[in-house]
Every structure is written in structure tokens, then in C-alpha cells.
Length: 235
Image (tube, rainbow, N blue to C red; front, side, top):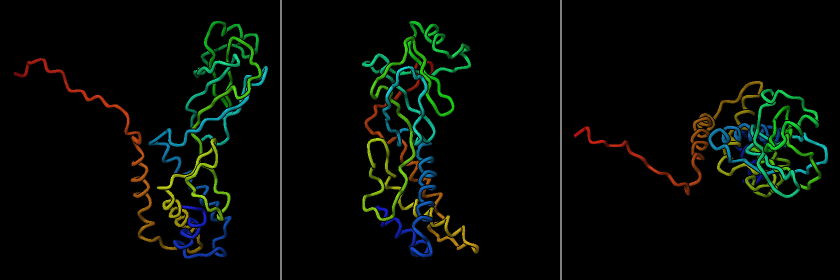
């Protein structure tokens, strides 16, 4: 569904037009509720909105910001600390580390130990046995992110299309549900709330059904069935 068709559908559900339901108000609803639905999706399929971000490592800098678009968790963090080899940075608890975080102490405490990272206050802090050097795109972060905001209702590209390699579109099977959710919010916000249609009253049921349908999307996984061991004692 393109933004043009989406807006038309919402206004059909609400029996409004661009004057009684302005573009900006409709987009505010859409952007709030697409995040709400995305959160439900990520609960049953945590990889659905995963994207990989690249950032430059900077000499002497150990702390790096987590992508602003992140929804609720990181998938993994890797880095090219030597400028070439990409390695996973496992997370550790700073409180259990129990040491100072100045450069001299970090270098001493991590001598001969694989580099690690700590997540705190919306940032990644790298601990390693060598100083951080300049490396172009040396930090690799895979994170669950929110779908891109709807910026215009005049667009003719389907809303499910990824805007670029670092952001994601909103899944097509939820477009009508998003329109319905916007309609419900608009009707409920009126000074005299507008009664919901039968379809709108089924919103939660239909959302749950479509969200649950996203479980186990990969049909190429191997599943090995097992049966209880039979030692013959039942015969």
C-alpha cells in the first residue's frame, strides 16, 4: 500500500477528508502506531527488523553511540580493532569487572584477553588490550530497529519498501491494520467519540493473528524429531 492509498483508506474508515483529518495529524497517528505494531512483531520474531550499521572507529575513542533507530535490543557487535580482522565483541558486566576504566587500567586488565564491550546509557564501550585506532567502518552493529517514519502522504512507493540499506519499510500485511488503528485512535479522540465499526472492533484479534503468523518464517530449518528411549521394560 502506498502512502497515497493508505491515507485514502484511513479517511474512508473515518469518513473524513484532508480538511477534517489533516495530513500531519494522520502521519502522527501512523508513525506512532506503526512503532506500536512493530513492537508486537518483534516480540514473536526478534530478527524481523534487524539491520546492520557501520561506524568508523576513532583513535583513542572507546565509547560509541547506539543507533537512534534501535527498538529494544542489539543482535551483535563486531569490530576490526586491528584494522583488518572482524571479531565479535561479547558483552560483559562493568560491575563484575570492578576495575577503573582509564586507558592504562583497561590495557593492563585485558592483556591477552579477547576484546569485549559493555552496553550502558545508550552507548557501546569497548574494552581491549590495545589502543583504539582509526578504522573506516570498523564498528559493525546489528540491531532491531523501528520501521522508517512516514514522511509524506504523497508518496507512490509501497510502504513496505526499505528506504535504504540501513532502514526498513513497514510490512505489507500490516498496512490495513495500521489504517484501522489510526481510524480507531481518531474516532476515540473526538469530543464525542465515534462508534467503531465491526471491523475496527476486531482489530486486536486480527493483529494477534497476523503477528503470530510471523513465527517460524524460515521453512528451511532442519528439525530432528526424537522419541523416548524404549528399554523393553513395558513388554
